[in-house]
Length: 248
Image (cartoon, helix red, strand yellow):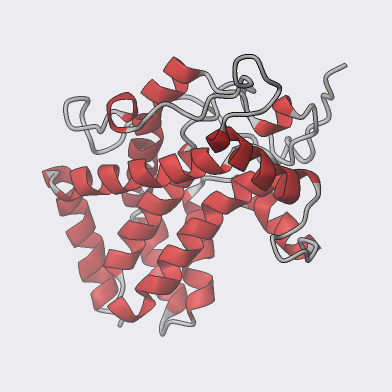
């Protein structure tokens, strides 16, 4: 029987409705056109062996999701597991906190308040990120790891068959690119690393395969490139940047 226990789903439920971003349909990158198909999940014909790309996905999910172990053999800490749960949240407040708090940047609270007061910027780019993944998600309907392994997932996901590409990975990196460009360049590497880490949380939770995360990052790059060519985004971005520059 399929396990139905969804840990902490009442706290972090991800709603899969499309929201309005900056990019109109004719500017929104199409994941079905940009991305290759996901790894084939059925065994090689005449064999029980997995196709190589999916075998790699399985190896990673077995270690990180099922065994809760890093590649060096160390167990994933409880604090990192807790982070994976909290990273499922895609609210503006969560993004502001996870990207700004670790920086030890001067006027940190004031900068965070600027981002919260102008939350349309982050809110809309997250919608653009999510919306860009819908075409491939619907076309491929890839099964998520927790469903494939018949295990509990640590976050509440809307369905078991929209794994590729990861919209969380896309959103996390689009927000990372945006915030990195708002702040001085000395913080860029740390911000982008946290964006990558945000996507990795989905593998720990069993919500995505590694290839889903990688595909999400490809989409994030395409989305952010499109955003930088969009007048509405640039107007909002420049308004927020001017306020942040005054604090630094």
